[in-house]
Length: 349
Image (tube, rainbow, N blue to C red; front, side, top):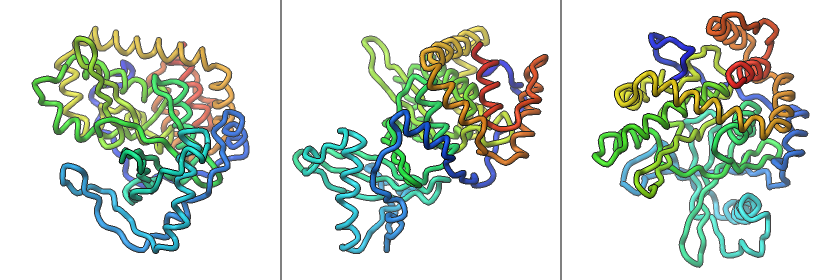
């Protein structure tokens, strides 16, 4: 875990729904320049025209927080070609001749999240295979979160933006809360490897100031290797990119829902090994930042001028971080973007 923050700090809390921030013209120009802007149909508002809903039951027969929504026949008839064309743009470069056998199998609505997402299930009529993508409100801090994940993490993200509509590719993996409930006590679990990955995930989120990594906001990708199983923890919610005012909200191990994996990590790893894995992650992120330096510099330049959090949050986080960096000057940081850029500079130099 991060060596900068005290172990005695209390649990992190996210008490209120995050404010949504519009995309500035500079951010839209950045997205256009780097291929994220697309002339996809503006469907987010259309999807709100559902007339009924039922709780979505997962394949295990369990009720979830998602609602499967229904539309009048004429509305659904108009939605299907729009939604399949979005999928074709996201996945196959917009070649609609390769998408005429695709249809919309189901649309789910998540009223629980800041982004109030819609999850669209696309089914291949030839073989029955299904895939998913998400339709969300385009929010500035969420876009900065997606870009920083793409540039600084070992993962690559596929998403598109047009107007107020954000399309995100599905990130596959076992939901964090399900992993902690069903996998953590398995006899086949490699405790050291999952402890190592959670330690690196915690550090990765802190370095780029991605908050609210409760167990429902990340997935665990499980990959069989030639001898052992490999794990990778991946965030799936980027709403809280440098938004909260308290530094502990950017550390996954401070959330109550992550206590089981946090306890396992401290039992499986000694402090010297934790320090090694933390330094590994910083070194790897520093290499990625160097490779993507032009794009990262462009993103941070736009981000530093943008307003993506209340001024009170900026002031509180500036004080919090200054307390952990003796001798480092953060007084000039007047925005979350400036704090993020300075934080990255200190952590990765």
